[in-house]
Image 1: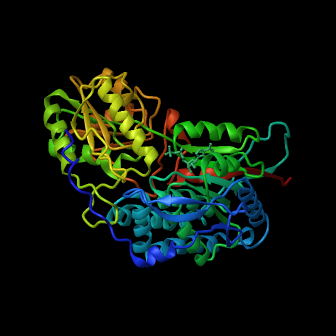
Image 2: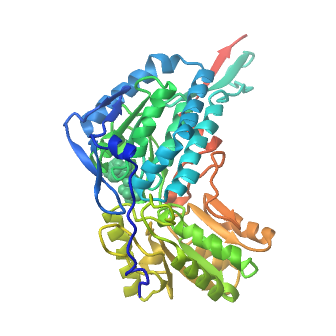
Image 3: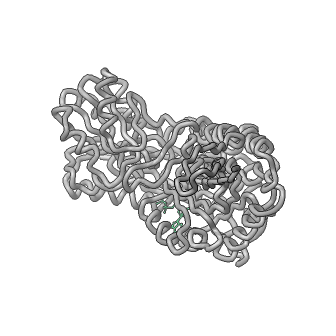
Length: 507
Ligand code: ADP
């Protein structure tokens, strides 16, 4: 029984300034100018809370990608960006962060409207962390140091050399991002590429192009020269594919599904472009019998339901030791039932809709498959129907390891919970039993014990007694089919740098 089915959904009021800004078709950014698509085509952007059209946006395709890549190539090889000192580059990147904060309310409003997430969350997380990413990365512009390396030069006895390495930008970068954190994903990608001196063509997700287009305006306002950042809204199979296979792109950085990640690798393989990928997950969240149950309940709830479950690192497989299983799982279900669903722009909304009809159908399809295979929903279990894309936060029990809902990434507010008896090899093996391995959580009163488990989990990030703690300084990315390379921190810089070794004979 879905206790939410008969509760009417509140309606949200879009601020007039935002409505006005969206009343004409939004162009794309190529070579420092805002332009229509070469084809003249636009596509519709929907409010996921109502299914209504909120904007029309220029539909980028192969011809637009080509112009953008040419502009990025020119900007990389000549012009002010290529000649700029690291210090000047760093100051401009820092200024982008400042401008994001100056416009925090507008950006959070756009994000709430376009993606559906609560505006307060967009403000506290998406926009704040986006600004921080530019601020953090701006400091690296002046610290991309090479090394002086003593060499033995065995083939030239008696000769003397000085050898050093230089870190150089990889060139023109094609970046393709998803819809779950539209502004933040743009920041994760753009900030390190800019700090290393690369130029960029960014393909934003067709579901959520609006905040990145506003960011483009702020990027120009900060003083980024024409052609350094080009922003193309458009569809994956057209604009995205054209960018991934473009012969004049040196590197592709992708965040999205593992399925599309494979297509990107295939497209990039002809020219052997460098590729970095941040892909899907099915992350285990493990509650040991000695954990503080209240902490674990709050943590496991946030781990799966934050951002409506639309996080690649969502803690979607909950493992709880037998003595705490009923308390923790029933506690999470009780919390889930209390979560207030509504449009992102309604003040007391705690969880918005899924981003699109496609995602709604996908998540509800998984719920149906779970029930068919014998899983039981102890809360939620259904989509709410109607014109918006709301799905009730759901906890499934009585699951088996081979069920689709346990194996596959659902990317929605659906938790599968199972119990274990001992903290042993079998528990670690089951936690690691996935094609993904992006993140994991461990909850325990004994941090040394939790750390021993963390060391054995094959995951790019492990949180102990916390979850979803992200920081611009911390590397994030996956093992196995969760991706290649890392986002954020010092680690991401290597995605955008080539190492050149220079040797000089001095005697
Ligand atoms: P999700 O399943 O989360 O929607 P996708 O992996 O489908 O994520 O999409 C992430 C990004 O990849 C989006 O910008 C989308 O347009 C783009 N994309 C989808 N298909 C392709 C493709 N064949 N080639 C390049 N980009 C693609």
